[in-house]
Image (cartoon, rainbow, N blue to C red; front, side):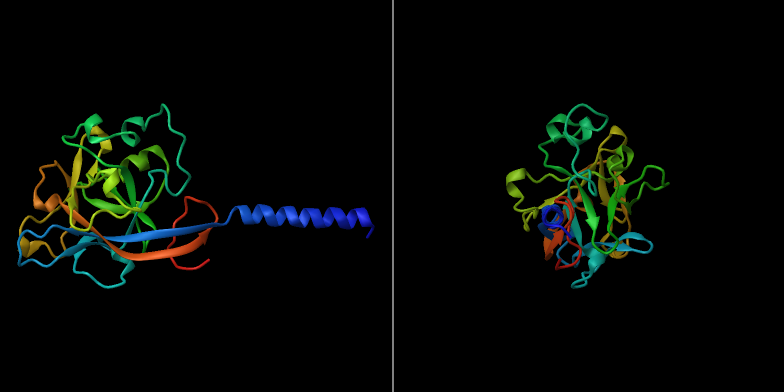
Length: 233
């Protein structure tokens, strides 16, 4: 091989290495548990759990990925879209003061389940308007179903983790009217194993949820909007 050819080959390999290295991002994902507010002091905490029969309330299982959720931006698993005029402006740029809500609002986001990689969603097709998980998508219709808003102020949420001592409602703006995630059971005796539905927001305990850090994973990803499901590269 001639000297110019060898030089070009070295340059090409170096550039390829730079291109590959530019796609490596050191990420940290904080996986949260979501528990419903107990109706009384005698009721143990119950957590949103992604089961084969849908999202249900269950007792805490340490390290169980079906009970772990990551709060991500609304276009996940793709890059955040450029803001501007579009069909989702009323949803993505929405605060409680600018939406059909009362009070002050926090960020709109999706919640990804660690076990399935799917997003918590609301469907109006189901007879009981249940919440469920479905593949995360940046399609406008999917984002509308999968986007939720908590009531924590931005300065209260530190590195994606809400205050541990506060409860919030999780509101959906799907189909243009506010719906809050709530337990289908309104009595303590029926809470265990109950499903979650989207219903009119009334601020009761069965629409109040708490977030606690369950796991923190560091990994290397190809894109800066990817999250860590397992630790390591």
